[in-house]
Length: 411
Image (cartoon, rainbow, N blue to C red):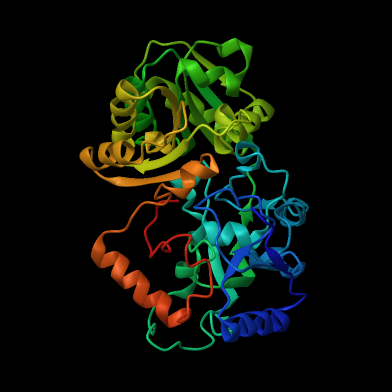
């Protein structure tokens, strides 16, 4: 496939001019940041790519106010370094799928906002969109829009911040973001429960989340994948992980309170802070399936107690592996072979309570013929299209890639 022409605006005014020119010429634009997630979605068929990497720099950061404002192309690493200097962070733990997707590109803060990707702490801290306080973006008319700064025809009353979070570049080019930040925990410890099967692990995680221990991460690694996260000590041994974060004295007291409430006779080990951080990074960034290949990898979001049942139904019929985050409600599924089996995957999700299934990785030929993102019900799809027609009436942006996430919290 021939490389797309790349447009790299140096500021928001130039971005407006580029979009307006494309609209006038009847050209379509693919919106991207650094390209770390360019392999997600159906193959791009736009006339050119407009990228945010020329829009960089922290605009405003006052640690006392717990807010950071930055241009959209600012590398996430730069944001995290600035926050770390003040012992603060983005509480939703933005995921990095570069290794899974075979990309060496770093992430941008605008890309995090546009894709609404959240890590293991999602179960207590909310999604990325819950920390996103404001955005500036260029709409399909080539106009600069600031959240709350103007009312747009036909979208009065809609929360533009929530619409842009998870829009995957289909509504416009984000040029600036404002995120809420919070102090980092002093330390963390993870309990590792050995040998539970998937159903037992779901019960253990639910029990832990129902206590006052303030568990900030709950995941289950079946025997086939546990070694990829925990190393040789857990080759061929299932592991259920429960993370506690906070001040050292508080973490210790809560651990002592949590263990007897789990009601299990299984062996329980503890990971220190460094080992805990390493394990949760691997879970968050899908290291068990980051094998350099392009076997289909699905990200399935369902009710926590349904995750293991969805995985069991699929793996009874299809070759592959799975593991679980978000107390069992986030299923990472890798299938063996070229076919994504989208019909079977979504049928299983629908039959067991409903949810969302997104094809994160697959060969380009597979993505070209697969509905990569969860199809909306007809009424929701119609509403989404009316909103998009108001913001991008001529379909300038990513028109063939997906219908934007119209408020559903699948991420």
